[in-house]
Length: 90
Image 1 (cartoon, one colour):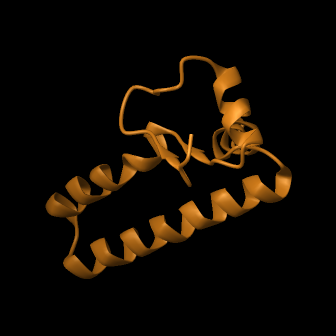
Image 2 (cartoon, rainbow, N blue to C red; image 1 turned 90 degrees about the vertical axis):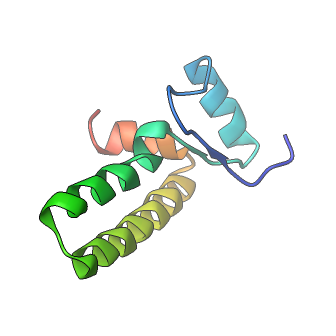
């Protein structure tokens, strides 16, 4: 693959856990669907229970969390998915 990132949209596109390790070895971060879809949940929640400012702050925090996860995974020599699984005790 000639890509900088793989962003899962739904239903965990990886056919096996080994694929995650393989693409991580190639230096391509894979962001799982549950990670990237949380923006939609944040938006829906704020439409009912929040303000525009709260929504913008939540999206900013989400972006910072993505950066944190990707950087921590790189420093640990893991894929973002593996880092989430081991760090968050999933």
